Image (cartoon, rainbow, N blue to C red; front, top):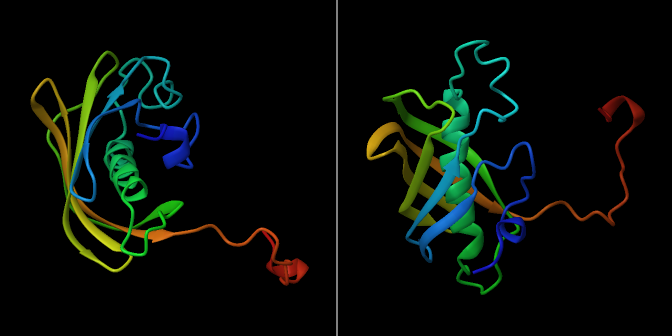
Length: 157
């Protein structure tokens, strides 16, 4: 299998998947994230009581789903370079995630239509469910970097 860096555009400090344990192309993925006290969000969330933000639990599951999408050859034979999040649904948090926990990230394809992937995912710690969600990813490639920028100065951010 390709390396994480080849499949996900994310880099430190926003790469939230450490290792892929299992993958069945276009169907399901199991990945791991080792949560350490050195995570950049812990000093502020919360001082003296470090808890992984729920939105980052969701992001970790979605990144695992992105690896599944980007490692699965589409019908045309060319893999997408990016899988962009287009929807989060039915999100539920069941337990806190703290330093020292190992997150087991699972995502499975529920439905696929052209470039859109509807998925169901979970994050768990030692067989205890921490978060569950449904999400949709869209296959895409980055804009052509050779195309000239036609925006006016007022449109640039």
